[in-house]
Length: 255
Image 1: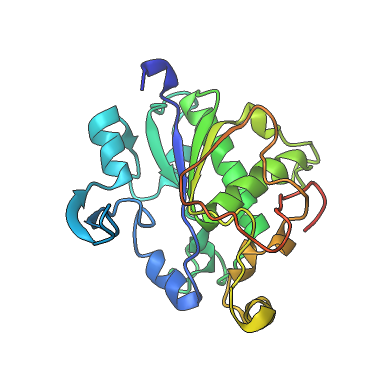
Image 2: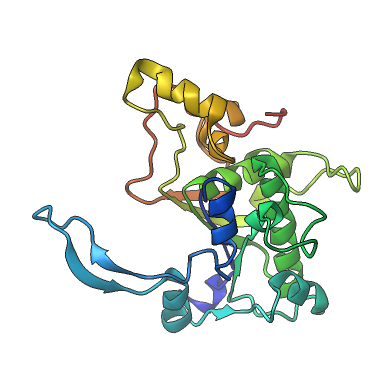
């Protein structure tokens, strides 16, 4: 990666499960992206084996010279810095689950929020703009795991095309904000269970835990899973796209 390509990287994690899972996840300062692994789950002989994998954040810091800037609260740190003074080669994590956690008292919000995909996408848009302003970088890279890819797509395809209710102005298009979007393990075509003749799908849509419905096509309406032109998207092998339902996007209309 050359100096000219060193744009800020924003990580977006996936589904954390019910409220108890959210409370556990927010205890991790980097939402799990600092965690490595010790298993090759399936090798060429279809047997697991030992192998030490560094975390993606550690690899970026040791191999690519990126900096992880937290200083107690990355949001407060960014807001306190003068514009164009933060290194562009920096790593940030969208901590969207903090607002739904029950463990922070009133330090994050007055009361825990019900997780909402569109609200998380709006917070991603705000973080992208803040990081761009403080680093002076023209654009950012987005790296998203699982449901995080749907949050990123919703920001790109819906939020960035809408009017900001606080200012009354149309938001900047995603093509001006995001250079590349990388997703892995993201259910771009929705999630369908191959059992129960559709009964399990109905049960999860009706009674599923907090955030489950963000992986359903009904959350994002449209006909194409592609991002808007000029935002380059990359899906890692294994990203889940199979579905009995139509592939979906977050369209400009309300979901």
